[in-house]
Image 1: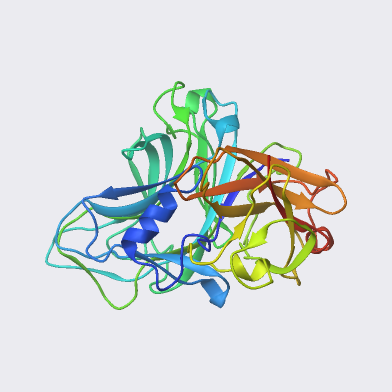
Image 2: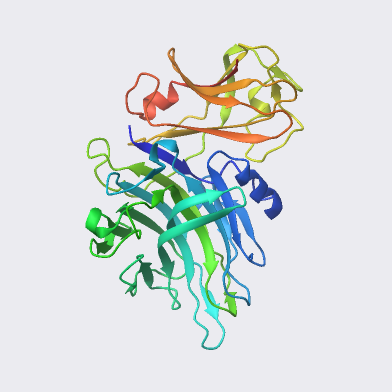
Length: 380
């Protein structure tokens, strides 16, 4: 029961979404922040995902100034927001498209694309610890712990190619059990239990940052742009999860039918599901609940060809036009399993996210149980 969260970038917009709107949508999403360091010239976009499944985050990586960057910070949730002394062990994975970045003259460049995060605020700002980068030659993996300096691993990456990266770590000093293992396409590249992942036992683990920062000047993209997809985070508990997961996919499943009950009112037409199955946010068509207890169920896309399901994330974009309703979202296969999203404030569009490590029966998800549930939303 240790699945924490995943992200395939399907729920912040689509290829037509502007960079400004993309940032706004991420900021409106539970436990997500957008962090800009000066800013990249072309910002970021939502594009077709790896292997044309779902969507991905594309981040511009050029510019003539150093320290430019655009990043998404993800919190792991209150159960993991603790000061660490070697007590919790994590694995995160993500798919990364290693676009070629050119450097002018002798100015070095490197790209930051993942690191541990200790705090963030609505400003937004954040404190980071150990980090991963791509080196100046576009093929070298760079790992920097908070002590012990830089480690480099030449020939790890191929230019203009998707790679799958996984990090297995304890966010604590080495003397308190901290370590970092980094896998690229299934091969263990970094195995460090000597240098500190974080500087002190009072480092307050929050989550991770993913994105692109150019750390040298006069950098320009060749043709492609860096992209990110298929992000996951789990706790290594030694029971359900004992190691990194291996090559994972985050697969979007949209509503495809109105199930029972069907208490919410469509703003237009007769099919509620058709009003909320888009990947882009809009308020032009929607479903509306006006009375406490209104309940709504949806059938979902069929999942096929999947051997293991580690967890399910459910997203609901909503706004309270009046009053202070409490939103509940979840799944139902005859037994309801819903999480309360709390009171939805009047007048602000928010994206509420709930992560479910188990199906409504309390068992691990599998393809059959995914295909047997309805997605649910209810107000009280």
